[in-house]
Image (tube, rainbow over all chains, first blue to last red; front, side, top):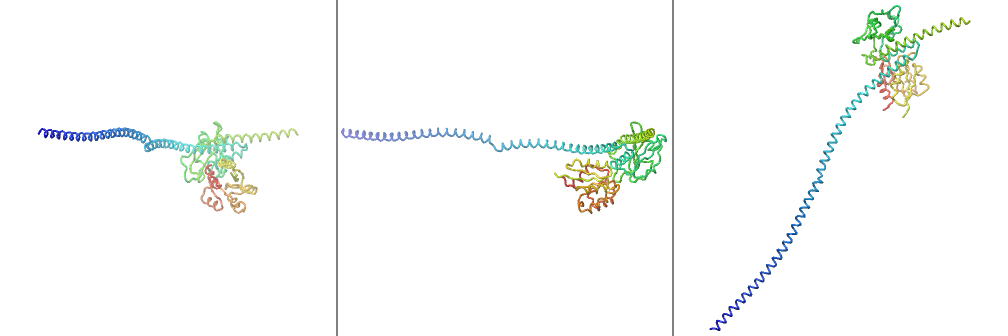
Length: 289
Length: 125
């Protein structure tokens, strides 16, 4: 019985040992699994750490690339360029308008100067011609040419003052027979008054049809040497293409008033002196014989 | 640049001076002056001209007679002729153009007007 009990105890012990051994084996197995898991976890953690580092690196790279992209944004560059160009264009347009205005002013000024230049040339040529001779007839002819060609008169006359008779008589005429000119009393009528006052006369309006009236001219200009009046120029009719007087005509009339008078006076004095010289020379020749 | 020779037939020295002044700004132009139609023909017999400017009313021979003679002359018939005259009537203009004048200007002349006509006839830019 005892032996049976002992054997049973032994059996139990053996069973326990076997169970313990199996348990140990299972624990060992579990530990191995656990160790493997631990190693795996460590590997995963290491990998995780590596990945995090990589993520941080990539985030930095992304940020840097964004900055680069922003700094090299082609649209921004273009917008900037467009703004600059628009400003440039605006400035250019302002400048262009200024230049255009200046050009217009210069063009207008050019026309004015050109006209002034032509007027001065006409005056110069007229003046030059007037003083180019001391022959009385030539001087009268030049005055006539100026009145025809530069002013555009068709019917007119040059009248000189007879100091003794106190009247004005025609010495030259165009478009009208000189001999049919009447004598104009100094101080009487338009012509006589111009010769007395020294003030030019211009008819207010040039009529379309003109009938010759010796006492009613279109224009009457005194021929003056300082304040001394030696005669007048009277214009009765203009050439058919000449419809009105211009500023140049006024200048030419002013020029004629002074220069034509001087030229006429000088040529008359010269002719008289020549005549006297011839007379004196003849007298001397006679005495010498 | 070619040299142009211009003959100005005009009895008034004042007008001749004015025409020369008006055309002086054209470079390479040589002017020859004649007092009337006969003098003009004489000058034509001595040289070949590129253009003739003539008045109508002149002593000895008028401008219209001169134009008709030029147009009948084989050597000079193609020379352009500009008339500058006091005659502003339509008939005068038509008569001159019929006789062979290329341009007809009336006095008093404007320098730019003369310059324009001459430049056109000489084909100067």
